[in-house]
View 1 (cartoon, rainbow, N blue to C red):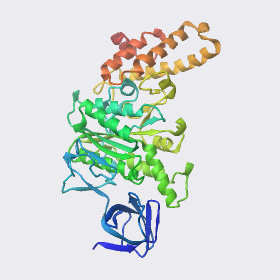
View 2 (cartoon, helix red, strand yellow):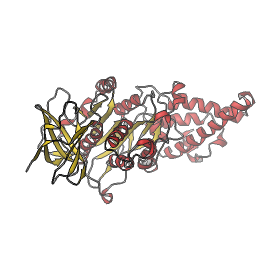
View 3 (cartoon, rainbow, N blue to C red):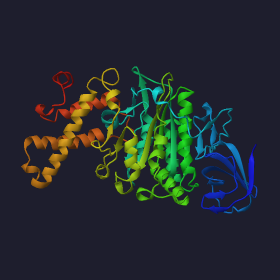
View 4 (cartoon, rainbow, N blue to C red):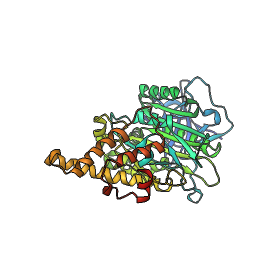
Length: 456
């Protein structure tokens, strides 16, 4: 039986408190009605007979008297069907385009269904993004969670849009048609959201994209639900419609800031830099929803994008993210200032699942050795550049000058590519072999003589 209450204890920010409440559940959905206006909330704290409710929307004008609160006896759910493809929703799963509501007899809990670790299938096949530094050196594997670490002003939005335009999955050497994209924008400005919509429209992929947009001027509470709605849609498409789903979420830092604000309103004891102590487990509850399940053809691959305050990779959000995810792609401000796009710093970037999804049978036999040689050679470039700053380029040895040339060519022709350029992985690997020709043969110690004879 539905429970209704007419008196609040207090209204504080986006939270309301009630007492003398019985038989309610944590996370239960609540309807708040005041002066004919209805809002949605959920229970986020139960202390004896007192509950704290998080309101998705503005609480301005709510009165402690004559505000009706109805407990719905169910968790936060959204209706889903295959018709969500090509549609745009707000942070709490309501349609904001002109296509009308989603009608379905199936409603799904946004908190998701935990995947039994025994039922997880190990990720193998790669997703080609068309970006050389990702495909060759930090290969994205189907079912992986691989974040992009960026900073304020860096072109992470352009990179995300480029991945959406060009990403494709190859299974047994053939491109898969069952590929869709779920895009979650968390706390973005209106012009950023418009940019993404236009990019998807111009690329002709909008019918394969599901968008969940929480604008910067939307209620901050919606930022906590938006990524959960997006991941719920991704799980539906993957595990019930057998789609291979790529989920891109930007910006996870906005999500963390929303968690911190709610934690402060709840007067919880803060942890590092004011973030709640449960930030790690909360982020894990999002990231761990990526993966594959044995016996099901679909998959969920996750690319969360986060901006590091002051480019600090030790900030709590990127720091904790690195512990949960299987690698990271790091954008460099130095490369960006050199007009290198995408400005991916390959040395701190890695994909921990890459070794199991590349090589003969997946990409090409030389992929692993080529990646190792590129990492080793570019690492030596950094040492040579540091030496050149001390002694000057004219006093460098012939070998060191070749490394400087290799480094410049690597950044200008391999890492850097056009914003609309879709580079095939085979072209990327061939380009790497052209770069190796700059270096002395004895320096190519990560490549087998057999590969050198075949590709050089």
